Image 1 (cartoon, rainbow, N blue to C red):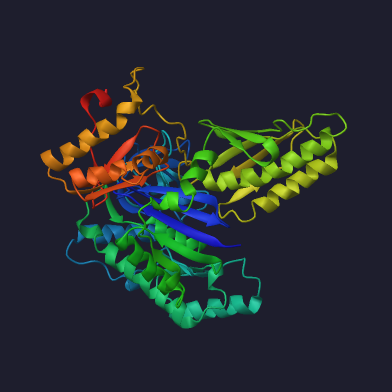
Image 2: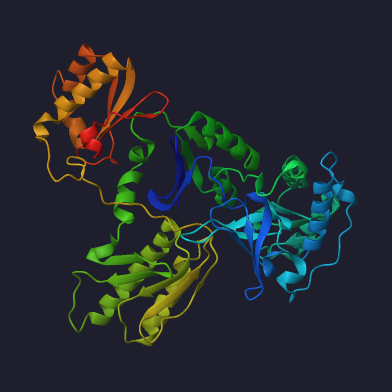
Length: 523
């Protein structure tokens, strides 16, 4: 299997696509300068205690108060609070972290009102991003994740991943980390650290430690609510979690992002930084790698897959519901059971892909085609487990119920990815009346004239639908050539699959969109 990562950097957001054998399996979008992302650390203030829920609502600056459960305080919450009080009381001098005494752990079955009070300041980390009407989910057990280890302050333990089966390797890693670990820090050794040398682990430990030291100094002067630490960009975080030898290429269309990704790859995989490539083509990067077309076909309400069968995917406030349909497959009584198992097995593969792709979390209910044989029902259950084995998100799958329903719970840390695949009418702009389409190119020429002669913009790119681009560029002396001769040689016409038929965009050299909509087009 060949894995590729494609990063599309735009002025307002960054889109990250993961391809496996050219097929899109994951898509993540992150707004530039995103707040309240997973991993961010805030100095918050207790707004309200909820003894019935054994939880508290914390003000971290978001429009909705964040949720902090007693079980998410962490066992060493008292130690953290002691450090925080000392730090806030003396703004000039931060307490020496190594000299802090670790206090006894809080009770596992304790009450939130015994630990917190209204108005109290707390250090918290975003565990789940705001979803729908809910504010962020918080934890007080702070952590800094690296590729090989996770650093946790206010504790003093070493834990090794259970996925490392070799007892000798587990003992080696435990002893190694114990010898280099600073005082008052816990370390979780991740699965990817198996077989790694002490130099690599020590380097990452020092990197994470510096990250903690550089940000904790902000606490004494901070006023709740305020951000203390901002997690690394999602591109780097994604690489940290999923990078493996199967990655053949990483394509980035922005120089700054290219440099940061290349530096990170050279750090975690010395000698492999050459797989990171800067994309400089004229076509949008997602169009070039046939990602745009896949997004349009995979994110709709209806998803067609093998032999005409299709899925209906509905998102509700409480859960996600998926209906499996056989489409125009054979409905004969003799072949009904065989058709059902074939369609269901194929559906399981596509559903596993869709869960990763849309990052669907919470409760997922799947209505498979009814099967009468228990052996087939068991076969489908086993196949679903196998199909989801590569999913990094924690999940639990239940066997089919009596009604042929399969229930899945999947870890939810971000809102489900929802891409609008339907296109608003670019011709009438919702008015119900259209200008003659034959005059579209004349309208474009008028806007080019305005840009060049009125606004003095000499260099820009015109993005249009591929069909329109084909018309503009056809012939020995195409329309685009005549526009260049008449107005500016700095004009480029680029086909863009993400645009609707009569839609257009003017982009300047800094990748900023130039607004050329007329008043009647906006209404």
